[in-house]
Amino acid sequence: MAILSWTNLNRNIDYCDTTKKFFGKFLFKAVVYLPGGNLIRNTKFEDMQFLLDERLSWHGRSYNYGGSWVNAASGAYARRKFLEDAKTEQLEYWRDTVKQNQTDFKLRVEEPHITVYSNDESALYSLVANDPRPKSIRQIFKPKNHNALEALDRGEIILKKKTEYTYRVCFREGKFDTYVVKSIGQLLMNQGDDVKLTNSCKTNLENTRYWFTSTYFYTKNLDIVTMINLISPDIVSGIFRVVTIPE
Image (tube, rainbow, N blue to C red; front, top):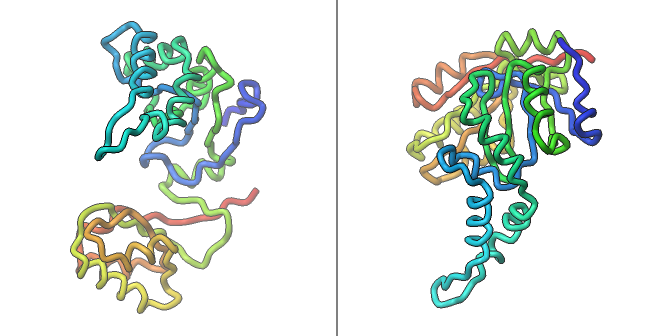
């Protein structure tokens, strides 16, 4: 693996280990500060400064909600402050990246950041380094070492601490009958130490809402998945072997 010093771009960058392939595909992830990032979705209108000014103007308007005047900036104060920090040259750079439709990267905007995924760390580094505000890089996720890289390529999930459990079983997000969810919850609770439920998994299984959010649990063997599939064939979204990687 190539060794790149991301601290050359930002000495305060947060280094993180990749513990699971992003979207089941990517090994590397860079989080870049990009206020006003949603503007890069407009690839047909060239005047970025106009688009930015329009958004700033929109966030300063006042509205009457249910008879009470509310300044939009009060509810979106943080968003406006981020917009005031936006730079047209940086937005234009990332918009041009989107327009190039590069297959080496996946871009995801969640203001005030843009997240870039890739399997080529060198290409990712160059992309971020050419940003007019290269110090905007906040986080970089990468495999810890060669052993971690091999585990990730096998489709495994890396845990920080050793565990007696062998698999992580992930539930799909969606609309499921509350009786189905309750039945699966009871089934898992009856497994004793063979299964370990995360706190979020317990909460989801005890919830009576129709919408079931994605979560996961750990198990020593996959027999439990067979039983879950008999109750609801579509609720399990993925099964991953878990490992720990020595320093």
